[in-house]
Image (cartoon, rainbow, N blue to C red; front, side):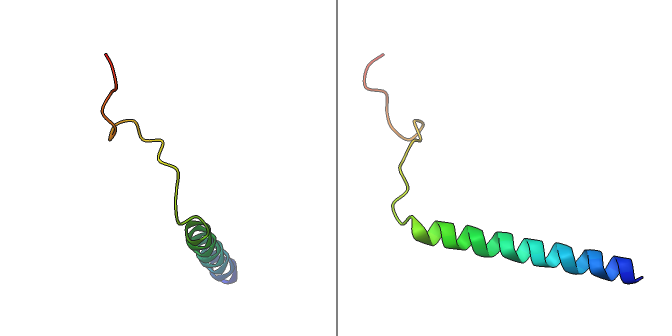
Length: 45
């Protein structure tokens, strides 16, 4: 039982850290470079 609680707590902490790091990285780059070629029409075929 104690091992399950420790494992669940560790998983919750890791997920929370990943979410915080993801939000921080998204807030650090307000203008992401657009590398999507699907939205841009082809210039010449």
